[in-house]
Length: 430
Image: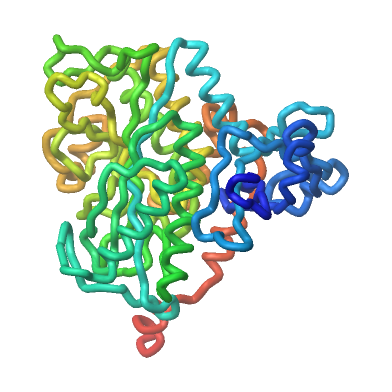
């Protein structure tokens, strides 16, 4: 900090919904913060604690120290992510980071390390109200010195300055829609990286006089934004998902993991797709999944098995396609991991690969194949989550209860709204 002329250190953590929170301290206070933590009123943070148990302590994780590239000069600022604890030093069960750590510890006890590689989509907008895409580009379009190309270059430069490795980037299918893929890391590091990614993208957008949004479906007529999530388990340096003798190159561990994801997908969807708007993206006829099935080429499948790089066993992985970029990554990675681990523990059988698009099948045909639908809306997702022992155990009583209450309130507020679509369609005919 002395070498870099750091004037402030921001301590970062998220609430239960994934909204970033921070408190700034002076460099002189950092040593004490690492040793003893920084106290704050947890009752003021969404889902953290009740009034009568409000005192919480933020303990910075020194391994997450990074300088913020957009805060330079005389006000140079760094950040560290925090673990939230109770005054007695025990972990706070309301801390999303602890929820993920607990799931990763379960994987570790089974001999596994959990790795993540996300493909993060988002929109760049000239205006927020009404939203106007920054460009008219399409999938993989290249425009010489285009606004979006400049934006991605600047954002990637800033991410790499913060130690976040980027694999590649490109224009996505919809006007103004872009994708940046992060290089794989363990799930906790990646959850921190996704949280940082959203801050960086917004900061770069503001600096260029535009807006960035991770809203899953801001436009009715264009594709929504997903965060396709590639996952793998390693045993030491060995990829536990790879088996050279299998036609799919999938090990028994990988097959059971995928079977766990498929079986528990409907009940974890409220966590992986946590907003009312999330379900406007999960509709038939698009590349967003609507049914709990798997395949290799079908991009409407919930779980896809990407083609492995020949001779590179470490690239064996599975891709879960429901997640959207407005998620709380700590909670989402935790429920996906535990769903897969449940499949391994119980040795769930992997259903046959679906070689055609599930949304083209009739309901009778899907039922005969044992293919379940994902929830149609947040209300359905909430009620499936309410019945889920896996989600309750993963999130813990406090986070589980708060998350349910918050989402019930959100859907109730949504139901009360009269939309422009309803007015346009019905005002003259009823």
